[in-house]
Every structure is written in C-alpha cells, then in structure tokens.
Image (cartoon, rainbow, N blue to C red; front, side, top):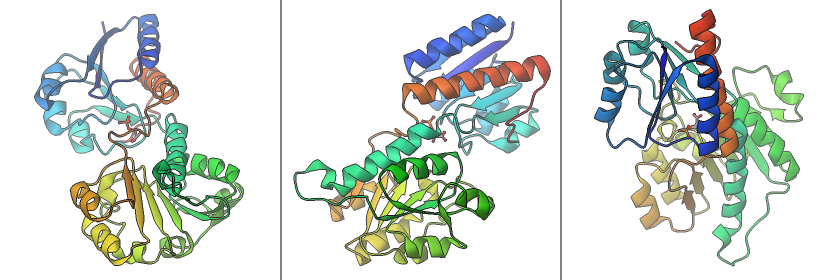
Length: 306
Ligand code: 3PG
C-alpha cells in the first residue's frame, strides 16, 4: 500500500486534514499525520517508510531526503519551495512539486489587512491615514500579486507592478500600471508589497539603494521570505528615515533591534500567518493530495519544480 506522510510542524486546519484523509481513503492509500513535531531529527525518523510526502514550510533538507529511502514524490502544499533541497531530491530520484495559487488569496488578504492595521496606527486610538489614492507597488506579479492588486482596487489605491517574467500587456489588462524597472517601482510607490521568491538571485536584494528611493511615509510589506531583505540595509533605512515603516509576516532576524529602536514603525505577525486560513489549507491540501495520486497512478509531473 502506498504510504503518504503529511509532515506539518504547523498543522493544516482540521477541515483541511479531513479533506486530505478523504482523498487518500478513496484512492486506497495509507496516510500518516505527523504534526507539531518537536525536533528536525524526529522528521528525519518519520520519513523512513514514506512513499510520498506533503509538507508546508517544513525543512526537507538533504538529511531528510536521504533518510526517505522509499520516497518518490514530495509536494510542498503552498507556493514557495525554498525549504526543499532540490538538488538532494533530484539526486535521490524524488519528484518535488508545489501547489501554485492555492493559498494566494489568503496571503493577499493578509497584506491588505496588515496595511490597514498599520495605517491606522495599529488601532491605538490616534488619527491614522487611509489607503485610498495612495500608490501601491507590487514587486512580482504572480498569483499573490494579482490578488493583492484586485483587493487594493477596492480600496481605491493606484496600482503599479514590476515583473520581468510577465509581459507588460498581461499586467496592464488588469488595470495595473506595469513599470520598466524595479527602481522605477520603488521610486513611485509609497507602499511596496513583496512577492518575489527566495533564491540565489533574490536573497538580500531588497537593499538600501531600493528602499531609499521610496517616497515619503514609505511602507514595505513582506509576505514573501525574510531572506530577500538585506537586514543590514533595512536597519540603516530605519535609522536614516523616520518616515520608513516595515510590516511583515515573517519577523526579521534583527527583530529585537527594530523593536527596541523604531517603536510604532513596524509590525510582525507572531507566527507566519499568510496561508493560515481554512480555505487556503483545504485548497492546497487537496491539490497536493491529488498531485501525489496523479503522479503515482499516471506519472503526471505537472507542477514539478526540480
Ligand atoms: C507559501 O510559500 O505557500 C507560503 O509562504 C505559506 O507557507 P506555510 O504553508 O508554511 O504557511
């Protein structure tokens, strides 16, 4: 019997787990739930007899993948797969996939939610500002970026986007102004929402040069990955500009210093919350399960990333 391990240190919503169980029950697969594990070494132990695996931000390191002797497929129920050692997966003949788009609306709703919260001084009773009429720059116009644009239109924001991988006309048909360079995006927009993946090219790419270009009362929103920010430069911008704000779903490593020195100019969710909705978990969980079944039964490699 094909054994599927769902390894989630941050578990799916119970409704999503029920859906995943149902899909695998129908397919006649064995399912093991491995949630809230205490240590990475427990994860290494748990993968030993799995044929297939679903993870979230769990770290599928070389050690994990080497220990998973029967593993044929690993699906990251979500968008970013920087937590999978793709080289180790390929070397071991393991297909790695993600489930693009399935949790994007949840992340986009959090972006706007955090923007309102911060623009209203985190509901401390003092007069805040409105989003209407403000310029929002979307850095990378993928699934989340598109949803952010859609929701921001409802707030009456002026929306710009930069994405070197998407033709300008595809962006502009959504009534979003496509700009020619990342510098232009940062120079134009008071609000910038990050949606770039974390990879060798993008790590630490959000730097002093870009952040210094932002107009007055700048707010950077990060629901992507903390690694894309050059934190040394982030601290410099905070120190140089008392109108700079940073709101993020992923607390930076320099969190303590920001909290100590730049009170009222930041917000960090206590735990990564972007994809934490029942809907997103159900969508991504069911998609991941079906992708596993389609791969095992028919060799379907749609959404393969290695
Ligand atoms: C993603 O890449 O899909 C998001 O960052 C969500 O991550 P999570 O599943 O760990 O919440």
